[in-house]
Image (cartoon, rainbow, N blue to C red; front, top):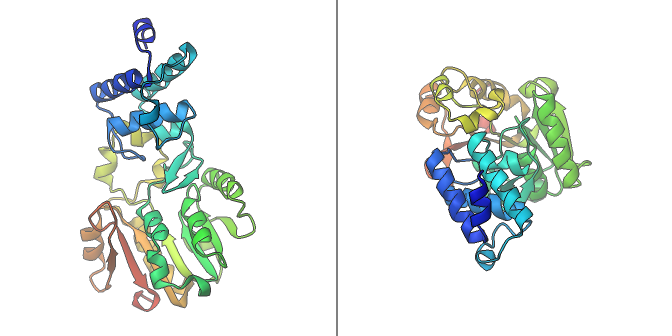
Length: 298
């Protein structure tokens, strides 16, 4: 941040142009809610000015107060110099219209499963009226567990994570949505702490980044907990364990939904006898599979 910038930039439009230029010059990496420098800059500036994050145009030519300009320049500089994902700066992440608290104890929520829940894809497989229990494995911030509870109002949801710190964040989000009576947070290594519980729906966005991809991650992603990203040599360590135990924890009509990013080919090669249903998302590709209980190994 320079004194010249603080003296010269006067409007939100000025700050937006400046931020985009800084972000492009720094060759920042995106993917934690925004996909490019413009959207990232607009979000950060609107959030920090306490303006609606989906309404930029009405405010573009508003003149900013000196202390507002100083605060925005500090945020822009922090995004560039620390290469923090925007969500860790603002302490929030959005999935559709739903806001969640986040910090460095959890990965920034961006699961494609959230989109499927919000669009009712899971409901097309399971009638909400008859769903009484759901499970979110590797819950992190608790976002998928919360969305399941909202989509299935008569269901209770178990939200499982191995990280006690992640569950602290999840607790805050569960409290924010007043779902304490319906979402149970469980510190467990996958199914280990669940006894004989069974569910109509199990979802999981497990660590699935392979070793080579972990080595190549941009700096922004290295601020996230490695245990929430790293899936072993081929990215399938947790997926194998989930598939080995899921049938035992599914009700007779239950379904399993798992996100694997770009790992479809690896998954199908590792499990050639399983008849995966790959679910389409707005991101393209096939990042999420679905299996019914009877399709899973005993």
